[in-house]
Amino acid sequence: MPGVYRAERHAVLGGRAGLALPFTPTQGPIVFSRDHTGYLDSPMLMPGGVPWVGQASTLPGGIKSSGVDDCAIVCVAELAGTIGAGSSWGRVFFAHLAGGGWIFGDPERYFASFTSRVDRTRCYSLVYANRESSARESVQKLLGDGFPANKLSIYISNAHTTHFAMEFQVMGEFGETFSDEPGSVIAGPPYGPVTTDISRWLSQDV
Image (cartoon, rainbow, N blue to C red; front, side, top):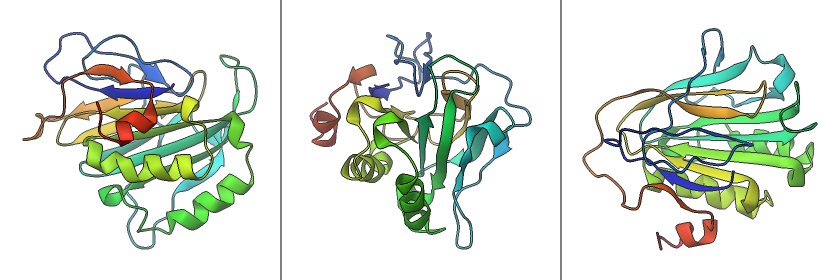
């Protein structure tokens, strides 16, 4: 919130982030610090699968997904109250997109329904991916559909495979819960919070 964070896998100091939290001025991976046991498991979308759409209050604390490789995770949540207050998050859209594309599980239809039910100006968004190329389509879609760039977080792990979790009890904190060795092609530098100018990142200027 907002901007782009590119992790340096070998950095000692990791970071912290959330839908309603700025990226910390660090360079290392953002590791989820909370106990995510019991969180709703939302798997990668395959034919016949569906994204998770519903009220944050119905989640068992948060949501998680495993086996993120060349995929992208997209989460959009409407702020229904004051940041930091209990039960402040309202309607949520969450999808683990295979290959970073909006193909399997008909996510376009579910996202259109979600969009019609929320105030986009009150929505915070996240695109989480291991590779920058996997994130770009979703970032362009969110901006094209009118979700504010100043409430969009983009996290690039620079790992080959990661697991992910986020909570909806306070600030929408998110991060990795597992990662393997870095991929063969590591993006950057720069690392850490590289820019808050999303259009500049889309133009591959950073």
